[in-house]
Image: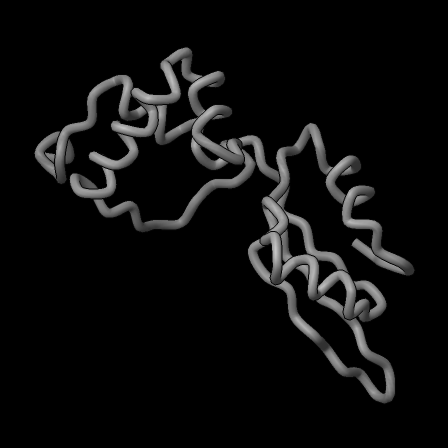
Length: 128
């Protein structure tokens, strides 16, 4: 029976876990759930001890858009991404095709902010 599988989550823990993928920090999780930042911080710390989340995520259901971007190589962009870890980017890869260098970027921005996200990357000559 599935109800006996794994640790039980409270309603607040479930709401917090749901809000995490679309949030950049504890403050945004708190705003989305209606809990205080301190409460969210305590709950997430406790959840790290209580559960190990592993699985295949349905990004569409979470309100995220899976995008892949192929752009001309930009060393400044790579340095910036390594330094500040741009939110929603899950991978940046350097590709060499023939004599040309490219960046392959994988990201999962919120559906409502895809255009804003791409514009904010300030890439030159790219395809999605």
